[in-house]
Image (cartoon, rainbow, N blue to C red; front, top):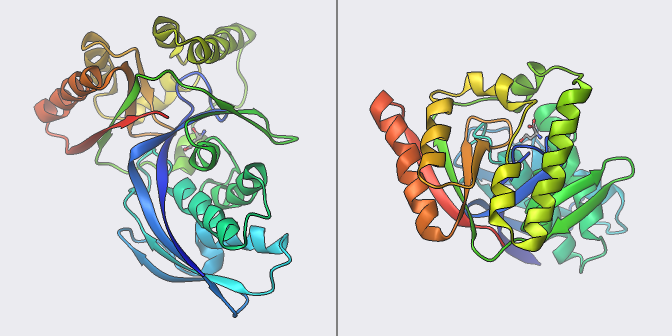
Length: 298
Ligand code: HSE
């Protein structure tokens, strides 16, 4: 009647795939304990690590859980303890980890009545609360693991993409907070056909590279002509961090989700470490606090 889980941090967008691509990290994630109760509804009984609301309707795990309960035959409720290890506003899917973790654990406690796709739909309600938009590019990889593509939102269609054996992600987080809602507000709502052509060429290239273990192709496809030029302005030292990562051998580098975290993909763990050092150097020189971690992408 109780389950303890690790819910992973995630990188959304992955440069070319705004709101459609995402991948799960194994180095960072929230821990949660979820318990069945005879009392109806969802109660957040504990939340440590971040200063976030615990009222059910103001908590992303609370609203995601309510979305699940609304479609369930189960007559009881759940208590949730959340031990946040992912900083809010860091750009690696902090809200998604709580929403996805909550619904995944509830589904397990109810003996799996719902599919992963249905769980994504419930967890998206948490994202709607957090950012104003029910985007799925963080919750999908958190629930499916590995790399995912949101092929369509209406109807919701999620594709799990295989990843080459030696693909690693380095993520560096300059210690500032950027709210997803703010970094979405500064985006333009239309793009030129010319930019669209470049962007969907790269999305296709990245997917092809992941299927065929073509690291070079993955690298050349990690380009974002639309969002990165606008959002990178909010991130201290972005251009230099990216330049250093690529010089150190990264396949590609870009903004993780809505930032300020910056990610790089590399072939092999050793390379991912060299890339981490190269990225760190920038913040050490300009005196910005940071944390950095490396994950294998599964
Ligand atoms: N696709 C979303 C965005 C992810 O970039 O706004 C937020 O984590």
